[in-house]
Image 1 (tube, rainbow, N blue to C red):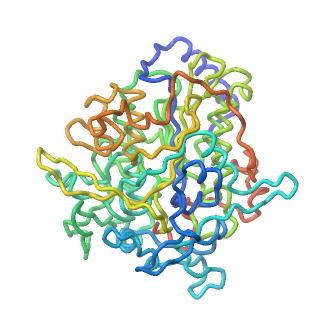
Image 2: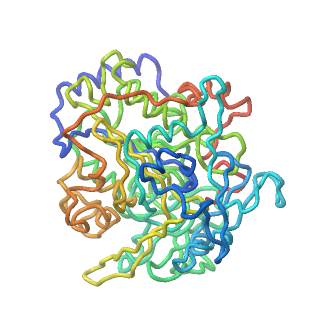
Image 3: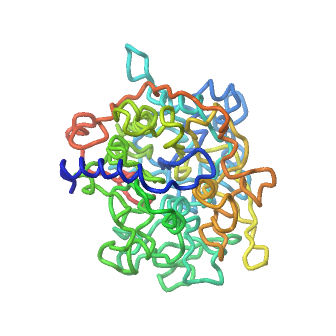
Length: 538
C-alpha cells in the first residue's frame, strides 16, 4: 500500500533517475504507449450515429436506406438503443460462426441473447437486439452534451480505423491474450503452435482464469482451418488448461535499458480475471494450478490495492509522472462498454479522462512531466491506442479477411480474422485520418516493438523462433511491402499538434477513483468486472 510520504519520495526518485539514466533509443518520437482495451463493440454498433465520421468516409453503416443488415436474406434495419442495455448478445466462437455464416455475414439473428437478472422474455429488450446501434442520447440539457460525444470527438479529431479486425474469432479471454502475447496458443502442442488457438473463455464454470484457474478448467481450442474441438473433458487434445508458456510483450519490453519509469504495466481489476492477460502466463503468474500469482513480473500487474485501492490507478500514475513505457488498461464494469447492466455508461468519460490526463499532463503536474510532448522537446510523447477487445455479438456489415499462417516452411490454413472492432489512435503526431488499411491486434504489438525495438526486424518479434500475430500484422513488413511499420498510417512525425481537451464527458475524472465513485455511480458501487452481467462467460 502506498503511503503519502513514500509516494512523494518515489516521484522525486523518478525525476532524478529520469534525469541521469541513459536514454533509450526510440525509432519514432513516441516514447510511451497506452493501450486502452474497451469492451464489446463493432464500428457499426458504436459509431453508426456519428454523422460527421460517416460523411468523412467512416465505414460505420451498412448500405441501404434505411441501412440494414441481413437475417438469412431478410433485411433487418439497424435501429438505435441505449449504450447500457439490460441484454447482452452472446459472443462465443459458436456465435461468431453463426454470424459469419460461411462469409455471408447474415446470421447475427441466430446469436443467443442473454438478459441481466431475469430470464427471457424481457420487456426491456427490443426486437432484433443484435442489430441495434448506440444512440447518442443527450445527458446535459444545458450544454447539450451527449453520451458518445467523447468517442465521436476523438474519432473525428485523430485517427479512426475502418478495418481493424480481431485476430481471434471469440470472446475476451483469447482476445486479451492476443493483445498481450500475440497468440492464445498453448505451447504444450509445439508442433501445432499456430494451428490451434484458445477459442473461448475458461470453462466449465471456473471462477478463475489463467494459471490460478480451478482444477479441471479448460479453454477450447480451435484449428485455424477447421472447427472448434468438442472438448468432452479437459484431457481432450482440443482443450487446454488456460496457463501458457509462450513469450509475451513482456519478454520484448523487459530487454529495454533499466530506467525510470517502469518498462510496462498492466492495469486490471483482479488476478484470475479473463481480462487480466498476464495471469495466464507461467513466467509472470507462476506454474499451472497455482493458488495465487507470484511470478517475477507479477509486480507489473496493477490491481486494486497496489495504489491504495485506487481503481483509477492509471490516472493516478499519470498525475504522479510515473507512466510506464507501455501500459495496458482494462476498465472497471461501471465504465466498460460491455452490455448487460443498466446505467453503466461511463466508458466514453473514462477514455476521455485518460486522453485528457495525457494531453494536459504538463499543466496538471506543474511542469514535472509532459506526456503530450509540447513543452519538453518530445521527451515524453505518448501514443494512445483505444481498441475494443471483441465484437460483443453486435451486427457488423464488413466481412473479416483471411490470412495465411506459415508454420515451419509449410503454408498454414487460411485463418479468417474475427469481426471488426473500433480503433482510435491519439497522439501529438496523429492527424485527423480515417484509414482503410487492414489492421489487427498484431498491429498494436508490432507498433510497440517498432517504437522500442529493432525497427521491424526479426529481433523485435515476440519470438523469432515462432511467428506470432505481430509477424502477420497485415500493415507491417514483410506482409505489407509499402509499410514502414504497423499503424504508420496514423502518424506524421513532421507535423506536431497542440492538444485540445476532449469535451462532453458525463462523469468527471474523480469518478474513476475510490471512494469518489460512489457519488458518481450510486451507493451500490462495488468492484465490478469489465463484463458486469449475470454470467461471467464473455
